[in-house]
Length: 139
Image (cartoon, rainbow, N blue to C red; front, top):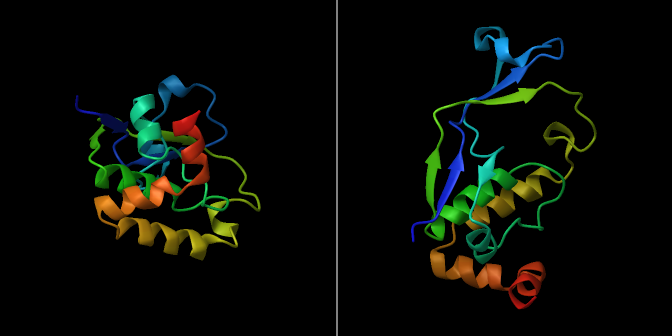
């Protein structure tokens, strides 16, 4: 069976707070928030999600976790498909835990690069050492 992860089309449009009726949004009036995003919204078969390690709990706060899960699942043989539609992001305040303020962003970036540089065998060995992954497989 081919396992598929579906993601949106890599475009995130920031929808301004004043927008009351989302049925009439004109994307020309919105900010292109991130033209190269690999995450934000993903869907997996549950069994395959856990087989590939689930969410990587090594990341601190936010930043690079979407890049990591995309690279990890590709390396482990997941077929990635994208919808033809962009993602709408509703504007909100950015707090101390946002990407721009994360004091661990360099750790997250370096760890993501480490994962991206692993081959399939090394990556599976790495995942098999994650405590939360062991618990899920046993449980």
